[in-house]
Image (cartoon, rainbow, N blue to C red):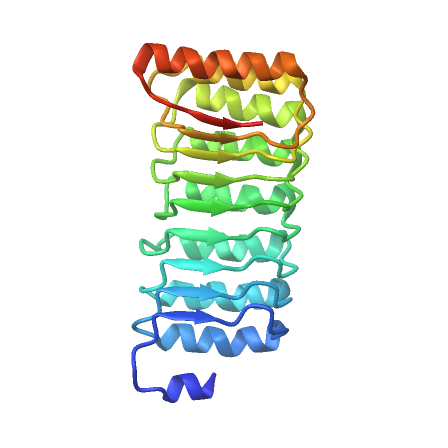
Length: 247
């Protein structure tokens, strides 16, 4: 990182993914982030920075006002680290894309994020696939969606949401939210009950903005597929809005 700091040109993209930098390396990255006036995109994917490293990066993000996209996926970040990242988002009006996939942040980690994203930050794309958030985490996300006005793309793949999680999300989408356009619920063990709830949400909310819904690799039968297909067709008939649903 010392070489980067000495570099006289403007660095806008920095990809140091899969480099085993660990928490110590994250400290040096954080120091660089604090000083950078040009960095827009940062990839730290698969570096095992852990909660300690996440805290370092979070502190740096509180000072940085240029980074719009950061990938912290696959870094062994738990609820503690996610909470630090969440706090950094509170007064950050620049960061729009946050990747936290493949981190075991669990329901408490997603709660910390949701508590902030309800009313703060400008995050438009949030990726939380394979984060072990479960139905309880889906409940926190559903609550946040009632208030958040910026989030347009949400990736919740492989989180064990099941029917309970799908129903929670559907209840939120059924009433409010005019911002979310893309929702990925693939690999979540959702069965017909969850499919029916999501179908009802699509039909009930005339202002729902969702145009892409990924439900691939779930457990519902043809009855769940039919319900979703009919909901998609109903939306098109009523508003001529096309919703792409992937089974």
